[in-house]
Each structure stands twice: as structure tokens, then as C-alpha cells.
Length: 374
Image (cartoon, rainbow, N blue to C red; front, side):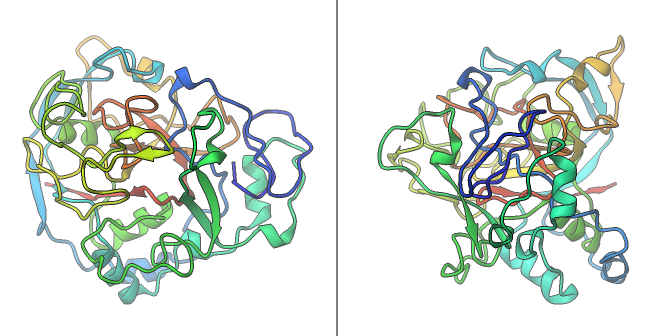
């Protein structure tokens, strides 16, 4: 789905729509599926053949600086409490080899060095290609006006009153000119925010950065193993204490989502990396702040396919993407929750919480961190 563009990827039948109208049908809140998800259909083909040569030359910064080594281990992967969604089940045994992982989410400063070295242009900075877009939409979906197919990204805009949580157009705006350098639109800037996580990053952008840095995106299993921080079968990286109990543990939404944030954690939006206590492995922001891309395709039934006696080792995700809400869209897993997550809606900061987004999605609360092999 694209906010403000006037077409939907949400059903198998095209719907007549007007420009600047969101046509995504209501999704019951009980599914807890989309408070932090864009559902933007793919806009561009893969990186192959376009920037591959450039990225091959830039593969020069392979280092473990700013990373910690996560020892190999076996754990129970999947839902841990009543908030768990169906795609978090069945809980299953997973073994992963050791790997290095970034202590923090990739920052504006780090991504800026990548862009300076490679002249890379992010997805959000490019005009959408309708020929690619329509592949992710139901057959017969009408092309929107060319004036609406512009370089843009999703920006959070809080309503000033309670809204229907089924209609996420009430707080997401498809903002022309929003991108990693201008997170709130063309008049905004990241000046003075070098240590903030870079956002408005598509899966393609994250993969490109990882390749340049000599790293890669974590698998979903690696991400969850690292996020648990050595605490087996716990709901959060810090244990089982609710997110709103005791001391502030992460950058999340306090108050009534999405119209009233009490800012108890001192941050209305994104916080600088390392603003809150790390988990048991020394990793910051494995809950809240910004969602993080994983390497895996999203498939809602994937866990059923790897729930085997004796468990599975180093799973790399489904071989094919499938989201029943948008069966035409190719999606990847995102993990960790963001500053917009709240127990009343998505509880994305639970370590088992799975979310998904199309590969070319860019949002104000979506970033990434890298891993490297031993």
C-alpha cells in the first residue's frame, strides 16, 4: 500500500479509488499486524546490474570494530506470551553458529560515509517505477496519476485525537522528499544527529551498505538469538518485566497511541543509539527505537515448516515470501519494534515479534544493523 497514491496491494480484486485516498481495507486490531508496517509494494527491481559493480569495488571496510561476538547456541524460537501472533508459532528449537553483530543500529554518520564513498542513491530518493510497482499489486489495478509517483517515504504524523486503529492512514503520511537525509521531509535535516539510527532505508539499501562494509544482514534466527541476550524464553531483551513497569527500558510509545505520547522516556521520536541500557550481550536498542531489517523472506507459515524433532540449525528463512494480507507483495522480515510501538497495538519490542515490509519500503522508524561471520 502507498499512502496518498491511491491504490492498494491488499486484496485480489482491484478497487476504484481516487487520488490521495488510502484504500487498504480495515484489518482487525486483534491481528496486531500493521501499526509499524508500511505494506508499500515493490518499486524497483533488485540491485543486480545497476549498482553491483560499484558495490563490489566498495567492499573494503570489513571490520569487527563496533561489534560483539555472539557465541553459538541453541534456543526455543517463537512466541512467549499471550500477545504472540499466529506467525510466532509453533515455538521451535533452533541452533545457530557464532557470529559478530553491530552493538548499535547503523547510524546516520556510518551510512553517510557509505554514501560519500559510493555515491549510492537510496530507494526513497528515486521516483517509483510503475512497471515494477504493478507486479506487486492485484491484476487490473489502475495506475495512479504521474504526479503522485514521486520520490517519497513514509513519515509519522500524530493525529490530535483518538482514531480508528484499523486505519493507519490516520498517522502515516507519504511525504514527498522524505529520505534518510531529510527524515521528516525536504525541510528537515539530520544535522547534529550523527549518532541517530539511519532511517527511510529499504531492504535493498541495507543490503548495499552491508556489502560495502563487508558484512550482511542477520537472519531472523540470528537476530532473535542475539536479542534474547542470554535469557531463554523471556518476553523482552531485559526479561519479563512489562515495558511500562519500573525504569525506562527502551524507546517506545507511552500513553495513548497514536495521538498522545507522554514522552516518559524523554524521546518523542527516534533516540540516539545507546540511549537505553543494553541487553545481556551488550547490544543496544534490540527493543524499540527503530525496526531492523533481517535477511529472510517473510512467510506467515514458515515456523511450521522448520518445527522438527531435534530442531533446525542455522535457518535462513522461507524460500518464498507470503503474506496473506497482501499475497502479491514480496516482503522481508523486520524485527525489534520502534518508538511507535505500544502494548495496546503491536508490542513490537517483544523478542519473538515478527513483522514484515516490502523490500523497497522506507519509513521514519525503519533501519538496520549488520552481522559478520566468525
